[in-house]
Image 1: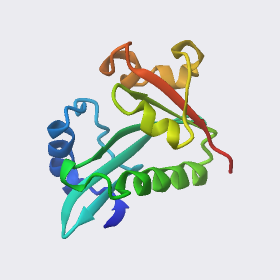
Image 2: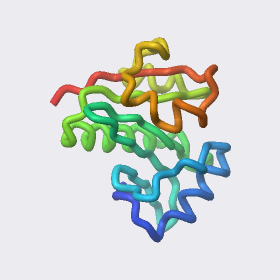
Image 3: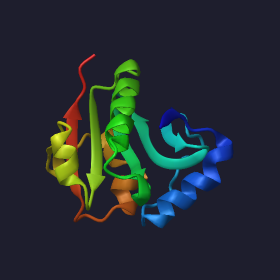
Image 4: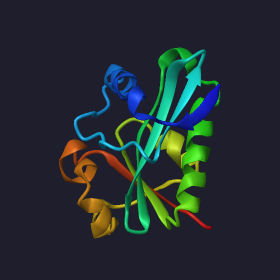
Amino acid sequence: MHITQATPPMRAEIIALLQSQQLPVEDLPSQLTDFFVSQEDGKLIGLIGMEQYDEYGLLRSMVVHPDFRNQQIAAALVDTLEQRATAAGIKALYLLTETAAEYFSKKGFSTVQRELVPDAVKVSTEFSHVCPVSATVMVKQIFS
């Protein structure tokens, strides 16, 4: 397993992986500056990304191909993203999930009411219209 920053030529493969797991792609940023991929033998097997809103980050698009799950790939992706968030001066990482709340709670994220999310993050497409209001909102404080 090898984790690197996503590059523009990977975009089509990134979209295909996200779509295969029914994750949103319509609001995927044009620049994948804070997106990281896991590859094995040149094949994209995992992805995680972050959108920055002032001093907050929005973790998004975390996915591992089903054939490669339970191999600590997701954990390595989350660790990589948290290191990036720390380096970028992010104070807290937020996320929305319909299926992975238990996983993220084991990674130090806690559930938070949607109303408590900073306005800077609420303007994201994830919060405003991509993810349903039934999605669980979680946060993790980042200490740099």
